[in-house]
Image (cartoon, rainbow, N blue to C red; front, top):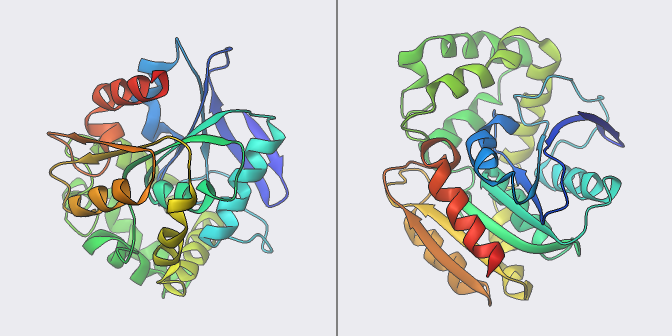
Length: 276
Protein backbone atom coordinates (compact mmCIF):
# COMPACT_ATOMS: atom_id res chain seq x y z
CA UNK A 1 0.00 0.00 0.00
CA UNK A 2 1.05 3.60 -0.49
CA UNK A 3 -0.10 6.90 0.96
CA UNK A 4 0.77 10.42 -0.20
CA UNK A 5 1.75 12.55 2.77
CA UNK A 6 2.77 16.20 2.87
CA UNK A 7 6.46 15.23 2.71
CA UNK A 8 6.03 12.64 -0.04
CA UNK A 9 4.92 9.04 -0.71
CA UNK A 10 5.19 6.36 1.98
CA UNK A 11 4.71 2.63 1.36
CA UNK A 12 3.32 0.56 4.20
CA UNK A 13 2.14 -2.90 5.19
CA UNK A 14 -1.26 -3.21 6.86
CA UNK A 15 -2.69 -6.54 8.00
CA UNK A 16 -6.13 -4.99 8.63
CA UNK A 17 -8.53 -6.37 11.18
CA UNK A 18 -10.36 -5.04 14.21
CA UNK A 19 -7.79 -5.87 16.90
CA UNK A 20 -5.62 -3.39 18.81
CA UNK A 21 -3.44 -1.28 16.49
CA UNK A 22 0.33 -1.80 16.47
CA UNK A 23 2.49 0.59 14.40
CA UNK A 24 6.08 -0.58 13.82
CA UNK A 25 9.00 1.78 13.02
CA UNK A 26 12.33 0.61 11.60
CA UNK A 27 15.81 2.15 11.65
CA UNK A 28 18.36 3.59 9.23
CA UNK A 29 18.83 1.77 5.90
CA UNK A 30 15.99 -0.64 6.74
CA UNK A 31 12.40 -1.08 5.60
CA UNK A 32 9.13 -2.48 6.93
CA UNK A 33 10.30 -6.06 6.29
CA UNK A 34 12.32 -5.77 9.52
CA UNK A 35 9.07 -6.64 11.26
CA UNK A 36 7.84 -9.45 9.00
CA UNK A 37 8.42 -12.28 11.47
CA UNK A 38 7.01 -10.39 14.44
CA UNK A 39 3.95 -9.28 12.47
CA UNK A 40 3.34 -12.84 11.24
CA UNK A 41 3.14 -13.95 14.88
CA UNK A 42 0.80 -11.12 15.89
CA UNK A 43 -1.44 -10.48 12.90
CA UNK A 44 -4.19 -12.87 13.90
CA UNK A 45 -5.04 -10.82 16.99
CA UNK A 46 -3.83 -7.33 16.11
CA UNK A 47 -3.94 -4.84 13.27
CA UNK A 48 -0.25 -4.50 12.42
CA UNK A 49 0.94 -1.52 10.35
CA UNK A 50 4.55 -1.01 9.27
CA UNK A 51 5.52 2.00 7.12
CA UNK A 52 8.75 2.12 5.13
CA UNK A 53 10.12 5.49 6.17
CA UNK A 54 12.58 7.60 4.10
CA UNK A 55 15.61 6.34 5.99
CA UNK A 56 17.63 4.81 3.17
CA UNK A 57 15.81 1.63 2.08
CA UNK A 58 12.68 3.33 0.74
CA UNK A 59 11.79 2.90 -2.94
CA UNK A 60 10.43 6.33 -3.85
CA UNK A 61 12.64 9.44 -3.50
CA UNK A 62 11.20 12.26 -1.45
CA UNK A 63 10.75 15.81 -2.80
CA UNK A 64 13.76 18.09 -2.39
CA UNK A 65 11.93 20.24 0.15
CA UNK A 66 10.99 17.36 2.47
CA UNK A 67 12.29 17.60 6.03
CA UNK A 68 14.40 14.47 6.46
CA UNK A 69 15.70 15.24 9.93
CA UNK A 70 14.55 12.78 12.59
CA UNK A 71 12.10 15.33 14.06
CA UNK A 72 10.78 15.84 10.52
CA UNK A 73 10.35 12.09 10.04
CA UNK A 74 8.66 11.85 13.45
CA UNK A 75 6.16 14.45 12.22
CA UNK A 76 5.70 12.32 9.10
CA UNK A 77 4.80 9.35 11.32
CA UNK A 78 2.33 11.51 13.27
CA UNK A 79 0.70 12.57 9.99
CA UNK A 80 0.64 8.93 8.84
CA UNK A 81 -1.21 7.91 12.03
CA UNK A 82 -3.66 10.79 11.63
CA UNK A 83 -4.35 10.14 7.94
CA UNK A 84 -5.09 6.47 8.60
CA UNK A 85 -7.37 7.57 11.46
CA UNK A 86 -5.67 5.24 13.92
CA UNK A 87 -6.76 5.26 17.57
CA UNK A 88 -5.25 3.72 20.67
CA UNK A 89 -1.94 3.02 18.93
CA UNK A 90 0.84 0.91 20.40
CA UNK A 91 3.95 2.43 18.80
CA UNK A 92 6.89 0.02 18.46
CA UNK A 93 10.40 1.08 17.41
CA UNK A 94 13.73 -0.70 16.98
CA UNK A 95 17.15 0.84 16.30
CA UNK A 96 16.60 4.41 15.05
CA UNK A 97 12.88 3.62 14.93
CA UNK A 98 13.06 3.63 18.73
CA UNK A 99 14.49 7.14 18.58
CA UNK A 100 11.44 8.17 16.56
CA UNK A 101 9.16 6.59 19.17
CA UNK A 102 10.86 8.64 21.89
CA UNK A 103 10.27 11.83 19.91
CA UNK A 104 6.58 10.94 19.52
CA UNK A 105 5.76 9.60 22.97
CA UNK A 106 5.00 12.92 24.63
CA UNK A 107 3.66 14.90 21.68
CA UNK A 108 1.42 12.38 19.89
CA UNK A 109 -1.83 11.82 21.84
CA UNK A 110 -2.86 8.80 19.75
CA UNK A 111 0.05 6.82 21.21
CA UNK A 112 -1.59 4.76 23.94
CA UNK A 113 1.42 2.50 24.58
CA UNK A 114 5.08 2.55 23.56
CA UNK A 115 7.55 -0.28 22.98
CA UNK A 116 11.27 0.53 22.72
CA UNK A 117 13.30 -2.33 21.27
CA UNK A 118 17.13 -2.05 21.51
CA UNK A 119 17.34 1.49 20.21
CA UNK A 120 19.28 4.74 20.12
CA UNK A 121 18.99 6.57 23.44
CA UNK A 122 20.62 9.30 25.51
CA UNK A 123 24.09 10.18 24.16
CA UNK A 124 24.39 6.99 22.08
CA UNK A 125 23.36 8.87 18.94
CA UNK A 126 24.47 7.99 16.37
CA UNK A 127 24.77 4.61 18.07
CA UNK A 128 27.99 2.70 18.46
CA UNK A 129 30.62 2.02 15.83
CA UNK A 130 27.92 1.05 13.33
CA UNK A 131 25.94 4.27 13.56
CA UNK A 132 28.96 6.55 13.76
CA UNK A 133 30.47 4.98 10.64
CA UNK A 134 27.24 5.31 8.69
CA UNK A 135 26.67 8.93 9.71
CA UNK A 136 30.29 9.75 8.82
CA UNK A 137 29.64 8.58 5.25
CA UNK A 138 26.98 11.29 5.02
CA UNK A 139 29.82 13.80 4.61
CA UNK A 140 30.28 12.42 1.10
CA UNK A 141 28.45 13.79 -1.91
CA UNK A 142 25.58 11.48 -2.92
CA UNK A 143 27.52 10.13 -5.92
CA UNK A 144 30.59 9.31 -3.81
CA UNK A 145 28.34 7.91 -1.08
CA UNK A 146 26.88 5.55 -3.67
CA UNK A 147 30.35 4.41 -4.76
CA UNK A 148 31.35 3.80 -1.16
CA UNK A 149 28.21 1.76 -0.50
CA UNK A 150 28.82 -0.53 -3.50
CA UNK A 151 31.03 -2.68 -1.28
CA UNK A 152 27.90 -3.60 0.69
CA UNK A 153 27.04 -5.97 -2.14
CA UNK A 154 29.53 -8.37 -0.51
CA UNK A 155 28.40 -10.45 2.45
CA UNK A 156 31.80 -10.29 4.24
CA UNK A 157 31.54 -6.48 4.17
CA UNK A 158 27.93 -6.48 5.39
CA UNK A 159 28.99 -8.70 8.31
CA UNK A 160 31.67 -6.28 9.52
CA UNK A 161 31.07 -4.51 12.88
CA UNK A 162 30.99 -1.16 11.05
CA UNK A 163 28.10 -2.45 8.89
CA UNK A 164 25.41 -4.93 10.01
CA UNK A 165 27.67 -7.45 11.75
CA UNK A 166 26.89 -6.24 15.27
CA UNK A 167 23.25 -5.50 14.49
CA UNK A 168 21.97 -8.97 13.61
CA UNK A 169 23.09 -12.57 14.03
CA UNK A 170 20.76 -14.10 11.45
CA UNK A 171 19.42 -11.39 9.18
CA UNK A 172 21.95 -11.06 6.35
CA UNK A 173 19.38 -11.81 3.64
CA UNK A 174 17.29 -8.89 4.87
CA UNK A 175 20.26 -6.52 5.07
CA UNK A 176 21.26 -7.39 1.49
CA UNK A 177 17.73 -6.56 0.34
CA UNK A 178 17.70 -3.26 2.24
CA UNK A 179 20.81 -2.09 0.38
CA UNK A 180 19.27 -2.33 -3.10
CA UNK A 181 17.58 1.10 -3.24
CA UNK A 182 20.82 2.86 -2.28
CA UNK A 183 22.80 0.81 -4.78
CA UNK A 184 20.44 1.41 -7.69
CA UNK A 185 18.64 4.75 -7.21
CA UNK A 186 20.33 8.15 -7.20
CA UNK A 187 17.30 9.76 -5.52
CA UNK A 188 17.50 7.35 -2.60
CA UNK A 189 21.22 8.05 -2.19
CA UNK A 190 20.43 11.78 -2.11
CA UNK A 191 17.72 11.27 0.53
CA UNK A 192 19.98 9.08 2.67
CA UNK A 193 22.80 11.61 2.66
CA UNK A 194 20.31 14.28 3.76
CA UNK A 195 19.14 12.10 6.67
CA UNK A 196 22.70 11.34 7.77
CA UNK A 197 23.76 15.00 7.62
CA UNK A 198 20.74 16.02 9.69
CA UNK A 199 21.64 13.43 12.34
CA UNK A 200 25.22 14.71 12.50
CA UNK A 201 24.03 18.24 13.29
CA UNK A 202 21.81 17.17 16.22
CA UNK A 203 23.99 15.11 18.61
CA UNK A 204 21.91 16.04 21.69
CA UNK A 205 18.53 15.18 20.16
CA UNK A 206 17.89 12.12 22.35
CA UNK A 207 19.50 13.61 25.45
CA UNK A 208 16.87 16.34 25.23
CA UNK A 209 14.12 13.82 24.43
CA UNK A 210 15.01 11.77 27.52
CA UNK A 211 14.26 14.75 29.74
CA UNK A 212 10.63 14.56 28.62
CA UNK A 213 10.14 10.81 28.92
CA UNK A 214 8.97 10.98 32.58
CA UNK A 215 5.94 12.89 31.25
CA UNK A 216 4.79 9.78 29.35
CA UNK A 217 2.26 8.44 31.85
CA UNK A 218 0.98 5.61 29.66
CA UNK A 219 2.21 1.99 29.60
CA UNK A 220 5.65 1.39 28.14
CA UNK A 221 7.71 -1.71 27.44
CA UNK A 222 11.49 -1.77 27.00
CA UNK A 223 12.77 -4.86 25.18
CA UNK A 224 16.53 -5.21 24.86
CA UNK A 225 18.96 -7.75 23.42
CA UNK A 226 21.12 -8.98 26.30
CA UNK A 227 24.08 -9.40 23.91
CA UNK A 228 23.67 -5.99 22.25
CA UNK A 229 27.02 -4.49 21.24
CA UNK A 230 25.61 -1.30 19.73
CA UNK A 231 22.91 -0.22 22.20
CA UNK A 232 24.21 -0.52 25.81
CA UNK A 233 22.05 -2.76 27.98
CA UNK A 234 22.41 -0.16 30.73
CA UNK A 235 20.33 2.17 28.57
CA UNK A 236 17.43 -0.27 28.76
CA UNK A 237 17.44 0.01 32.53
CA UNK A 238 17.76 3.79 32.40
CA UNK A 239 14.83 4.09 30.01
CA UNK A 240 12.68 1.79 32.15
CA UNK A 241 13.54 3.84 35.23
CA UNK A 242 12.59 7.11 33.50
CA UNK A 243 9.18 5.92 32.32
CA UNK A 244 6.61 5.88 35.13
CA UNK A 245 4.72 2.79 33.88
CA UNK A 246 7.49 0.80 32.20
CA UNK A 247 8.45 -2.85 32.31
CA UNK A 248 11.69 -4.35 31.02
CA UNK A 249 12.30 -7.58 29.10
CA UNK A 250 15.75 -8.80 28.06
CA UNK A 251 16.02 -11.16 25.08
CA UNK A 252 18.85 -13.67 24.82
CA UNK A 253 20.61 -14.89 21.66
CA UNK A 254 20.04 -11.66 19.75
CA UNK A 255 21.82 -8.52 18.67
CA UNK A 256 20.18 -5.12 18.19
CA UNK A 257 17.72 -6.20 15.50
CA UNK A 258 15.60 -8.36 17.76
CA UNK A 259 12.80 -8.50 15.12
CA UNK A 260 15.22 -10.38 12.85
CA UNK A 261 17.03 -12.49 15.42
CA UNK A 262 14.16 -13.36 17.80
CA UNK A 263 10.85 -12.35 16.18
CA UNK A 264 8.82 -14.92 18.12
CA UNK A 265 10.13 -13.84 21.52
CA UNK A 266 9.54 -10.20 20.65
CA UNK A 267 5.98 -10.96 19.52
CA UNK A 268 5.31 -12.83 22.78
CA UNK A 269 6.60 -9.88 24.85
CA UNK A 270 4.41 -7.42 22.89
CA UNK A 271 1.37 -9.68 23.15
CA UNK A 272 1.73 -10.00 26.92
CA UNK A 273 2.33 -6.25 27.30
CA UNK A 274 -0.71 -5.17 25.28
CA UNK A 275 -2.96 -7.72 26.99
CA UNK A 276 -1.79 -6.52 30.39
